[in-house]
Amino acid sequence: HCSGGTWLPHQASFVGLLASSHIDDTTAPSLGFDGDVATSWRADEPGAQWLLLDLGSDAFELSGVRVMRSKNKVRAVQVSYFNPARTFTTARADQDLAAALGGGDFLPWIPETQVPAEDSTDIMAPLGGEGQSEGLRARYLRFDFNGTYGGWVRVADVSLFGCSLQCTAFNPCTGGVSSGGDVRADGGGGGGVRSELCGDHSTCFYTGPGQHACACDKGYGSESGDDTDCAEVDECSLAGAQARANGGGCVGGVGEYS
Image (cartoon, rainbow, N blue to C red; front, side, top):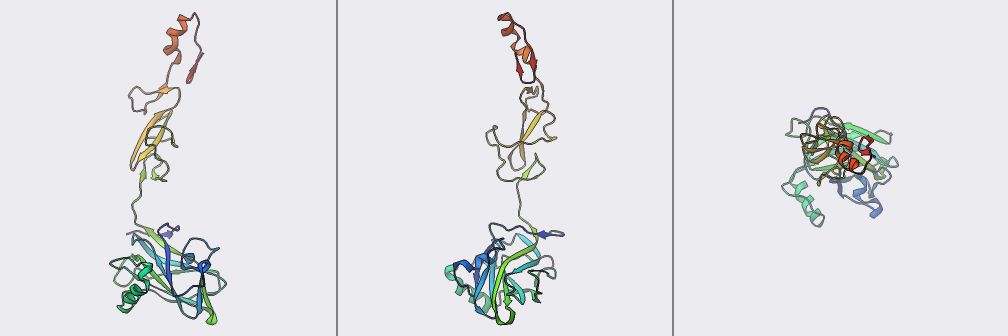
């Protein structure tokens, strides 16, 4: 499990899957969990409403939520969670939800909490959920909202606090996570960086998870052949025979001669 945590950036797998109601496509459930506070989910009925979030997997350890309400339309919220044997599908949403709720499959996580007048509210949960001793691991989260003074619930966005437990590709050149766009598959091109792995006058290229290749800078060569001991090449010594044959001399610089 993770220690500490952070506000998780919105993931591609995060989806506002279903809601008790919404007005039209401009207020759909997906807009309440899209990482954009300029959009919002809006219920089409007054009173208590719910929003179901799909995290894509249970590879996150959660310890809190942030509710960013829109137009001050949320008075209270409580959160429950569910880890089904199979995923919900929109086509069978009503049936799936009825079975899950009727069977008590959603378990309590965050008890009903009053939402103050601020635009956003951070709610830190007790460790884990029912039956979980550490941070909560769940794929589905259900947010139950009460609107203000019988109004229509409107949520700009929901953020999650915790840790990602997903494995990521390690880039030895940077000592961090690969961006996914830094692979140099053919040994040419790509964006290399300076690294102690390759030494002076050499560039380090990420070639795959945990893998790298070094390439000497222009005008430098490697005696070992692995480009980690790059030294300046004497271009004149290489071109000397041709220069003398032409009756001339040679003046060299790094990577060039004349």
